[in-house]
Structures are given as C-alpha cells and as structure tokens.
Length: 175
Image (cartoon, rainbow, N blue to C red; front, side):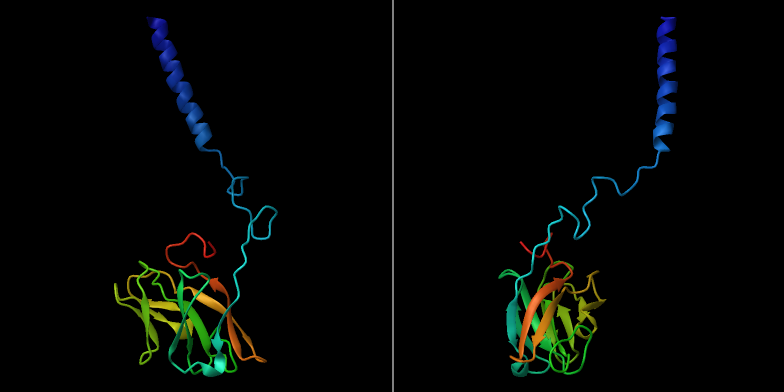
C-alpha cells in the first residue's frame, strides 16, 4: 500500500516536471505544416479569367456598368468616376470596378452618384470608390474587393483581369 502512494506521488511529480519542460519549448511557426509561399514548389495559383467590361468611351460618368466577375455568381460594377482615382484605368485613369457584395454580410451595395459612395441597405455600411473601396463607416470591417482592370487604348476596351480582396462568402475568388 505504501509503495502505491510513493509511485503515485513520483508519477505526479515527474508529470508536472515534464509538463513544465514541454511548455517552455518554443516551436517555430515556419514548420513544415505551414502553407507554401506564393510561387513556392507545390503552391497552387489559379489564373483569373479575362472579361471585357465595356468601351471606356461608352461609359457615362458617375453611373454604374453592371457585370459579373470572376464568374456568373459574383456581381460587380464598374464606374467612370469623372476624375483620376487610385487604381483607375482608361484615358483619364478614372474607371474603377468593385464587387457589389458588402463585406459585412454579403448584402448588395448600391452606388449613390450624389455622394459618390457605395451604400449597403442592410446594415448601413458606406464605401468610397474614389479611395480603393475603403470602408468609411458601418458594420463592415473590410474594404470592398476591387476588380483589377486593364485598358487597351487601341480598342478603347476595359477588361477585368483579377480581384484584390476576397469576395464575400468565399474561401477563394476562383472556384
């Protein structure tokens, strides 16, 4: 009986010491289980499709042009802002495009030409298309995903080529 108490006491003391030693070991974050860096061997990068959005000259200033990108389940809008904006394309670098799904809960956002802002009718988030879709106020915590555009001066065509930011409800923009 007495040896059982000693064995139990020895076990508890040894276990406590082992836990203290293991707890003090630093495990590096860059272990083999970490995801590979972009461009690393084994990394998967899916290409975005190219999609014509429209002719720059035909886009009216301060009005939306609706399209879907990168697939039919992703509503987007392009806007000719009327003045040069960061990330803008076209002859005046004033055409930008964004996902039209609010980053808070995926409700559709609408463009208000008078204030030049996107507004979410569900929870009242406001986004600034003249400042890379920055969230101005409301429940959202992320900017609107910006659709990357290219402009071909020869054909006056604006083309969607990618998305900066994650479209609401997705783990990846390319399905």
